[in-house]
Image 1 (cartoon, helix red, strand yellow):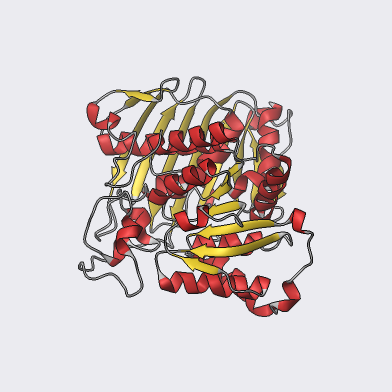
Image 2 (cartoon, one colour):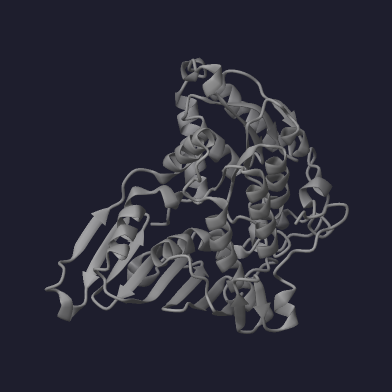
Amino acid sequence: MRPFSRRDFMAASALAMAAMPAMAQKTTVAPSEKVRVGLIGCGGMGIGDLDCFFRNPEVDCPVVCDIDDAHLAKGVELVEARRGHRPDTVKDFRRVIDRDDVDVVLVATPDHWHALPTIQACDAGKDVYVEKPLAKSIGEGRAMLNAVQRNGSVVQMGTQWRSGDHYREAIEFVHSGRLGRIRQVRAWAYLDWVGGIGSPPDGPPPAGVDYDMWLGPAPKRPFNPNRFHFNFRWFWDYAGGLMTDWGVHLLNICLWGMGPEWPDRVVSYGGKLVIDDNTETPDTQTTLYKFPGYNLIFEHQLKSGLGPNGRPHGMQFTGMNGTLTIDQGGWEVVPEPKKKDLMPPIKKPAGRDARPAHVRNFLDCVKSREAPVENLELGHFVSAVAHLGNIAFRSGSEITWDAGKETIQGPPEAKTLITTPYRAPWKLPV
């Protein structure tokens, strides 16, 4: 069975919307308690995230933004169904940030469009919920974190597993020390629901699409359907493949368990070994991170759904006394054969869906001004570790990371990948 995917989430959201009359969902909330959300990006994740925000009665949405008229229509439909009014529609994200009736900006764009809306929203006094990975590059992530720190904004990165009950329980077990000294951590994503998408020719963008705005700071290229909605993540101009798509979720849990230390050295190998299409990011990749006290291995494969222990994805902490394995279905501990007297085998199922709790945590922090569970310092750290894997892969070399200076000791081609160059007239604030 394949893991619960974005498509599954969207299908479930659509069924929920269809089953619930619009007027039945309207709830009276004091004006002082309302949180007005402006949605930037009405694709699959944007609609799913906003639908999740609407589970909280104080949330309203006065405006939705997208460069595609078809996506805008979906945003309007959702707001009308869940809040009983028609939101304004815009194609320029800056028109969302300019509004006085927007408290929170929800950024659910392709990765190359995460940084600028987040930075500008923070500078305008807004709070932000931004999808993962934090940005397309380490340099963008640093600029976003700088914006949060200078403005005191509340910003949450949308890695919802950080709010999952069974993930927290498993990490508490890791922190308890019962596994003994942990010498190796492993994470993997073997996904059989992602396959080749062919090599269609370039052509005109669909009607109703502002393609130049979609490209934004990315290089100017002819429109190709494979480089657009959803599949943008398999092209280096816009994203980082599975390393930053699924890797950020998985690495987030690994680093939660092991602490805030950065890796010293990183090496990564792989390539397009099974898929024949016009995508660029590897379908097979293995990355080894050397941390001061342990090794971390991240690997992914497309067109394969059976990973270690038959799990399509998961994380594993190996200590001297036993091994803890965790995925979306739950967690378990298998003791070392000679250490069974120290602890019995443990198996725990998953708890509640983590996404609503992650959104609720963010909303609570908007009101309390406390840091959310996946604040931007954590989001930058986790995303940067994933980016380091891709930098090692793309440069074809082992890299040494200087965390204090956020620089790479290594070949010039690796250093150039730390920050993404922007196409004029777009500029990245620092």
